[in-house]
Image (cartoon, rainbow, N blue to C red; front, side):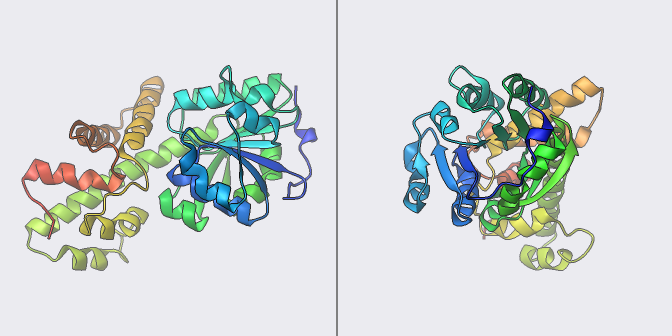
Length: 308
């Protein structure tokens, strides 16, 4: 069994090799911060061309999660779905199989809390550590290094790797294994209803004959102001639906939330409504758009368009 006592000294670029699995919208920016901070990075992603900008910056490309872990002290992952997390970390060709004793797995994907506990248990059995550390802040937070990081696991281990987290944003210790995932799911529940409120307000303002841009600017400094408004208000007005966070992934997150609510005996109707509205986007083939595309669902419901 690994013990927290083995994880004491803070890490730095001279004593720690980092592995990274998943260089999509979020991972690519996050990796670039670590490279700029001086860390040696070995990366794997299913589509190597997506990793080319990082390879050009000096990252080494590995052929598999196994290969990443064999040359890393800490392996980070940020992939799509819980099935991907299982595959790249504890599957037959997963990173844990070649991670040295004392090594650390850090999964930053939004995933099942129960899977985070399973990964932590599997890591401990091999003399390693695991942290679940999903993030919030979208593509801009990743680019700016201002992500909110929700960390679950051994607090000593999380504090040890804080210098890496500091390159990416602000780490918040939430409790034992799985608690980072629970915190992120609560975050997604809050965002879901906020996004519904944002786009409903915009549709109402439009129908009332207001200039929606002026309206958003007017409410941004009042009680209706929100991060969602700041991040997505102008994008919605510009019909910019490029994904900072995919509808498909948000439906996945909200589905996990609903499953956990069933386990807890919780009724959260706002969550259920948002989930249904986002599923309607998928039904229209819009799953690869960003979450701000929720406006399209409300426009269809009301037979209006904010498009200028």
